[in-house]
Image (cartoon, rainbow, N blue to C red; front, top):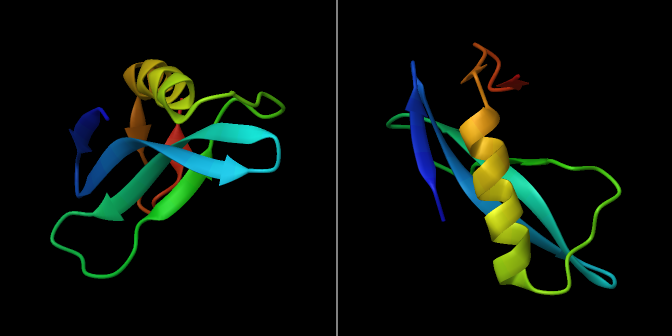
Length: 76
């Protein structure tokens, strides 16, 4: 799991289990916020056999991320 901090938000690599494997995702939560983060699937259409492979892909996408907007949406 990788983590990056943006103005007002924290983003971490994540994995979403699904039929036939795992999807790479980035979870976003406001700094100091309570409750669950918002999960954003990345690399649409790609499914990974293992959670580790999906997390590796999510880590790479997190590195490409340029920011998180005021609504908590990913900015590339």
